[in-house]
Length: 219
Image (tube, rainbow, N blue to C red; front, top):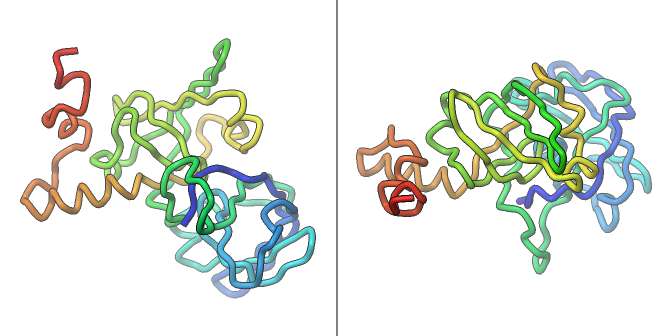
């Protein structure tokens, strides 16, 4: 389990095909402190297993299914990646609960630089629309972020300078793909509603219905 708080950005230092899978080598340092073989490390939001370690690098195997469902197959030597070690007992939960299991990939629609922030809009896949709500949480390339607006088949994020400086998000130009993972709590709510015969309900609409949104309080 992860929190979506990126510890460092690493660099792809090696890629070796192994049939339908690939061996990734990543140059990094901070996430390796105290790391052991078999530990989980999130790479752009994808949970991978450390299979070989040095003081300055880690090697991991990426399977065919992971290639199919994430953006890892598009990586190249020298690319920067977001890295986060698995949450350990007693550590603060600074972002939100992130499993490292990507739900979908989606295209960046626009990136607009404003005075104090950057507004990034991303396509919202149909399968995730019931799970994404304004002011809710979502992981984008492993980064825990708060959803701004949800409209017209896309959602917006407001990136502060700290997030931009510590992650790879600003490298994502319009048209590039990112990994998305919906809030696991939203998924459990959706499953519970499906069991009650309300599987097609949209989370945003339900929050309004039950009074957890400003719209439901006459705002």
